[in-house]
Image 1 (tube, rainbow, N blue to C red):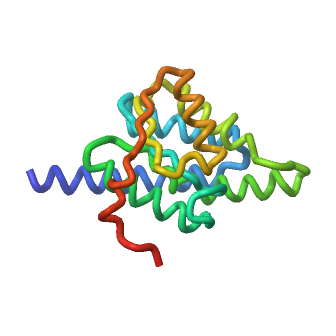
Image 2 (image 1 turned 135 degrees about the vertical axis):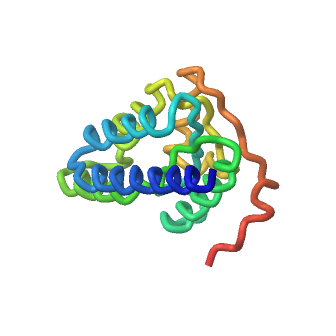
Length: 170
């Protein structure tokens, strides 16, 4: 049994390394969406949950701080659910956003939502969106809630008390 568990952990680690390599090679939001949807369908399955909270807008005021909060939330919920991990994709999304801005993009970078996240939600594998308490301060989280409601995906508010045990961010 221990050997099986170790093999499973090793296989998961190899899948994550391979996923990170595919993500690193993505040169467009469209390609990143294909990779993300493939990951959800092949690796996570049809009972996947996703956490929504501020990343680039709102929240604690920084991308790093917001991602730390999302990662902690993911880690806690992963004890009960299969969770789509934003952090695997965020560096590439940030790089593609910079390229989008340099090529003349203005305002909010809607391709992140309209191209990448819409396809993740439309995959049919996401069963629940978990909204962090400060989701209203995020343009993306507002869009995700509306999109999930339109697609019939369950939307749940995470209570503020959930964060009582969260370590203080440095």
